[in-house]
Image: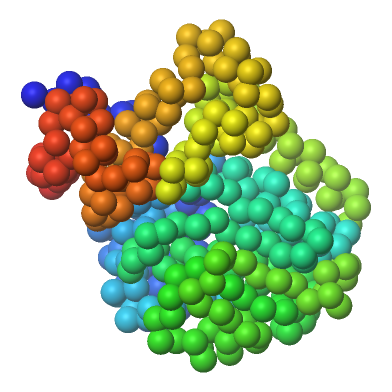
Length: 348
């Protein structure tokens, strides 16, 4: 007998419908039937949706996979990047467009990424010293998520091109997943060397581009937009307790078993003792939080993805698949394999 009920929201994360609109524009530009995809995925009018409307990450990936099949373009993510506008990144995109430098624009885009997306795998990062912007790892890679990496790196590149009026803006691109046989196409689009099978997903901006002033730079407008972004970020995080903050930082650290109370506390800017004390004040603790976070993620990985049980065990930081099986049996009173079958039947 299954002990627990389905969690209310998807633990794997969600993304703004603004990105769905970009994907559907790319489908239409490639000659695909965007209306058919909207009907199939029950998307009435994403281009007119409220700015805070979201779609789950797994659903977005399935939509992208269907879009690639509909268009026959396995590099559809590059097309999405080419069609991306600053407004497609929400207020953060508009704030970036009006920033004083290209570097400042990218820093804003990264700082306020939570306004348009939240993913259990991590968040983008900005490295000023290296003139690099990085997208987190979404291993294991497959036909459902290649396009996500492509579209993000291409959208960042397109924003820089939009701001500067230049196309030769990058020093190099690194992509974590292995080559899929389109290296020449990617190098032609990015106009720089592209390394597949790299240790990270990132773009490195040319020295001559980094401090350029964007064409739409306007200090007063930028300050106003940054203020609005900051207010929205605080609104999102206002209701977060320490357990919510800890879970937010913990999920990406689970992959490959990298999480510990020391690592988590450092990520949150706290000492391990302080983190443990604050969790205890909310009736929780590191081990309990680790267990519940794994439980929530495991349910959605089984229900929403085609990842193997071994891959899910790795993503959740278990030492081996049997350890994951044992934990899942304790949580739900059923093996993960059997539970996946039941979840799929209910879904269909």
